[in-house]
Image 1 (cartoon, rainbow, N blue to C red):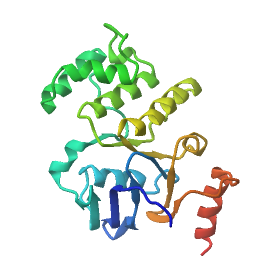
Image 2: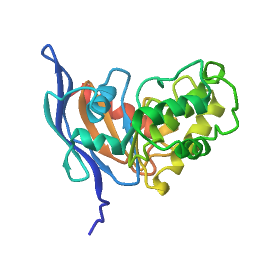
Image 3: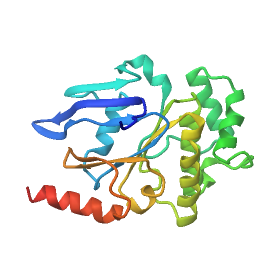
Image 4: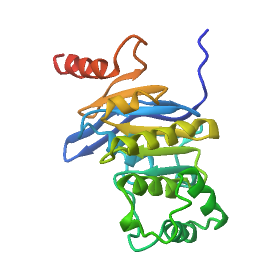
Length: 236
């Protein structure tokens, strides 16, 4: 008997249509608790649209999103943190000041600021303004904001975009630490070499359709598997 972990999030036939064009077409995902789930696909595949529907930024045309065993409602969003596209930062403020703004908006105790700065290793940035941060520091501050509400599910959309190799490695180490701290991660990316080192399970999306969910065999290269999956489905 194969043991399956409890699911924290499911989508059932999730769809999004714009003027008769399907951006997402009946996608059913199964995300297990305390894992890193890789949502993979070329640019424009529909990954960001799926994530925006999960966090309530877009309304699905059809289908269901199930969180913790129940249909996702607005009140559930307090358990979900997200960094979709670029982080919304106040460039003239320090890391601590940025987080202070968000604690006031979200009604979160200011004691949480030090905790999240420790988690993302930005506690020693002092009076340095966000506009002076490196790209990696900006991404980590965006993740700190997403962590303020102690989320059970963290959604990261292309978090390594624009990072140098050192920044990518730092971020990879940070993301890898989350599941053992009770945080499930959905990691959207088209940089397969990075994702392959941290994920427990993947979904391959192209042209709004789910082509594969699971993990390739251990002896298969993820980039080759990804390319072959997309090419095979184009030829069908």
